[in-house]
View 1 (tube, rainbow, N blue to C red):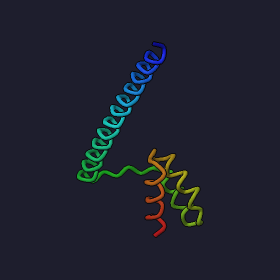
View 2 (cartoon, rainbow, N blue to C red):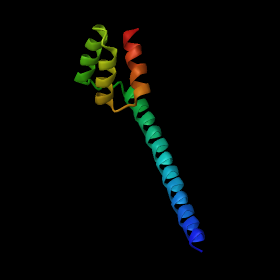
View 3 (cartoon, rainbow, N blue to C red):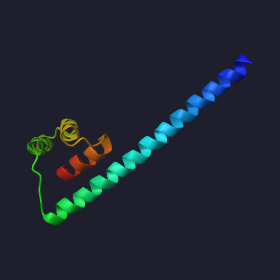
Length: 93
């Protein structure tokens, strides 16, 4: 009987974890969608947000300090490693 109770509790915990991850994934997708819409609106209006840290990123790229530039870019924008590397690579090109 103890094993059955343990399995029921383990299954309930597993279902709870999967449900939470699913909700987080949906939320992440919704946030990304809203961010894309805001980017389109900003582009359409011709608005430009000048972040002073981007000058630092550009200077680091010119100095060949790519890893440091990626780190500063991530701190300034909050994007992930892949997105930051791609952005810094575009600056270096």
